[in-house]
Length: 354
Image 1 (cartoon, one colour):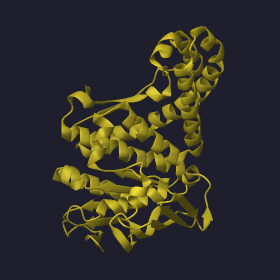
Image 2 (spheres, one colour; image 1 turned 90 degrees about the horizontal axis):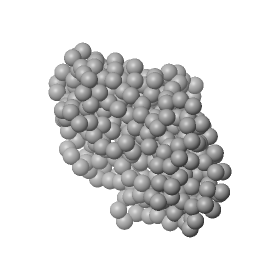
Image 3 (cartoon, rainbow, N blue to C red; image 1 turned 90 degrees about the vertical axis):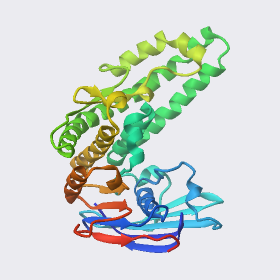
């Protein structure tokens, strides 16, 4: 998978700008706050239909403008794909693929694929389970559209069950009405659990290899999937929902299910979140993203585009060189403030208000 060109109209800091990309390594060079990350955001938007920065999509429209547009030309092993996204302050965004409008954002998934990493991705290691679930959901949705729709269905069922827990006045009446929601949510949860388990089983091996490579074989990364139940998910979740009904009723929300899943990450036997150095945490996060590349390639037959935002400043020279060597596998677009001209790459200079 490759991106050939990108045109931005009133997108973030860009009024009207076009970019052409090389099939291998592309480096966007410029001082801070010049708009380098905006280019990566636009590419990622064209891939999954959402921003990695904010849920407030209208923020991408340039200041004092009413509309914005992203136009990207991708190429897979079969053909070119043109994706256009139109933003309007007064309407919902519109997405076109080869000139044909999409009814739902989910229809965009799988047309193209990309993996994004920045220093902010440290939250994948350091912060809440929600950040690690978000990583899993984006990674799996790109290679399995069915998973994306199952996830949306689970979230709606969960919201309905939680609403019932909050609004019920009598626990005995609740017991008679909540059973149908329990059966449905447990069924969908089991399917999501199995998809996540299969993906993590594959991801963990690649993450271990990537981390060993980046660390010069000095560290070993172990990735473990943490879920409420390890087997017979539907059956055990049903039992747990019934057992915890009074607690859920008092709290007003559902306390078991795949919305509580997490990843445990260990380097040389130590939990990285609590005991790893910042350098180790950064390398672990990057290793997970590089492992995602391999999983994506296995499922689609092609490597996705690799988007790396300001990653050079956060790595020592040895790990930087190892990363650059790893990127030879796929088209890569990197942002940085300065670059060694010896690197064989396409250099794109970025300045504000171009």
